[in-house]
Image 1 (cartoon, rainbow, N blue to C red):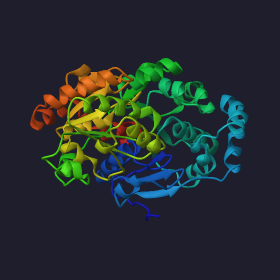
Image 2: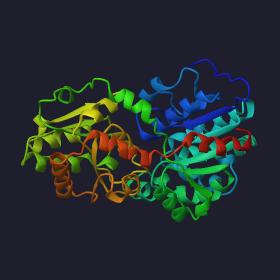
Image 3: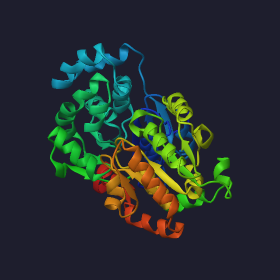
Image 4: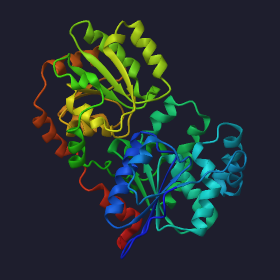
Length: 406
């Protein structure tokens, strides 16, 4: 465990609460915010249900990491002490699948009693609700900001965990107690307001941090992938993300098979996840295994983005699709599904990259072929990222977390 962070002068203690630090969009955003908060003199603590994940290594040394988790079945006990609807749902949660974040409910409540920070930023929704419940149990006035990173209606429609269907009602009851509610895109904010009945003006859109200078510095490094180091080889289509159903990499493989039938190309997918074997088997069945590489996790994806001909996003749904902004910053042409809710917002309705329907391999293949055959200069693409940089998100978060005293 890291040593406690210390601050001087006007430093405040800010806690960031999430499940774990695997390589995902939530985790990358929290690392970026932690860097900014530390650079501005604040003491930052990262509270995790499980203190594991590749992104832990990218945290500033000043950040203190704590694991707050109770063993089953003790984790569920504090639920029964909550008022109203949350208490009524407790038996249902316990009888089905306990959300991972709730394992931190008791320990987090004790933390807020004994070592209360000035503010807590909690994400995703299960963590935000857990933080609000922990504050209620601790009788703590701590400022809690709930951050929504994905399109809730799509999560409910496409995930099988029974507790998911209760989230809109719980958010409607408990989110008004938060010091702020942040959505990572206007699409996520609109969806959250519609699904929960929360006032839309109560939800603030703040794009994820995008450190363009840092990204471009990392992009200048040599990539790990041999195909991307070989400038004389076939052009490479790059994709990145957790190998999970929401990213719909099977559709991308089918689209790439159509591309490969018409021209030479290669496909590299960065990321880990439960669908690795399924994707490897599908690539073999499609006859494209020799031109597809499932490259796993890489600590610096930007070096790969800077050398790929096209970056492809095939998701069924996203929050912001921050990876598209990163690809643009690296000078890579992008093709993306027009999924709810981030792609079109990032790409300005198609002005900054090609958009195709969700789940349509033929349309994806045609867009990839067009992008492979007509790629603008990296300088032109990099210039586009300025329009989606998002300004200074760290300052906006600090306003919500610390108020006028920041």
